[in-house]
Image 1 (tube, rainbow, N blue to C red):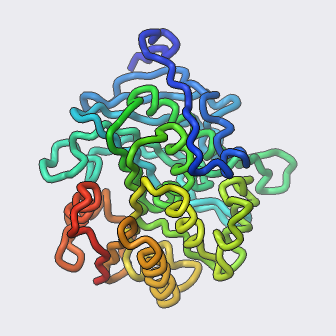
Image 2 (image 1 turned 135 degrees about the vertical axis):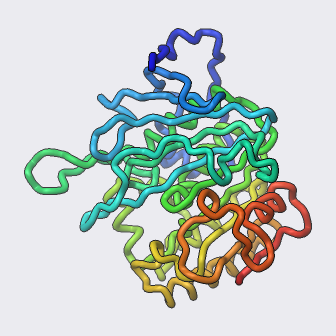
Length: 349
């Protein structure tokens, strides 16, 4: 497949990031430092009609954590709405690394399926960000994991995400609505991406869908990970409970809802998610998940809801988009969220 140089596409306008005061503290801490600084080296049609792949140099920029090349995708829709989808794939800690080494290319399944007439975002433009950085799309660090004096893990999640968002805003500069969705590590990363998306799109209504990445852990766990990845800029210094005493990120999600009243936010999860519950154990995970969901719903009942399945399944919006939970399908529940109907409410099976 021949690649066309992005630099030759002179007809594409430059879009300068526009500030938004909603997350100014985070911008002051530097979370936006890579916006507008990285361009892809090439682009080409990839797979289905309307899908374009953008490749980046791995010399000193976006890269997978093993050093392999990073790329992202766009798909043109037929509306003026936009979905930004963040793929998942594990993470790396100082103790163990269980992250995918190569990003999953664009896949037209579930919420990404443009041929499903019942998919509420079927005609949306799409920016698809694969995951391969091992740092929940937040990291900015290089480490020597085996002590041989050579750096061998490249946590460039912030560069990968920022460069991808720049491509997305170049292609889709003024959408009416934005669905910011992700699953697993990508579900976690929607909260990393939110302040960056808001800076690029200061006026758009944003619908944040966190599928199976709620950020529940043991005390000290996330502090250690954010330090390892050099991602502490995403925790506002004024927010003493953004990482709670219990180790959870519920306070950060509440902070985001309080900072930006032009967003809606959703959790989708099973009660005892077999992947996400590994650190806490299934019973403790279930209790903390429901507690977090209720805390956020009580604080923002018009803008936060949860869809919680019985059992231990992990992720829904790609693999189980048509599954019914408590009498409503995942697909229909997201439709109610985006259409802002009175039927959008918390469902716990």
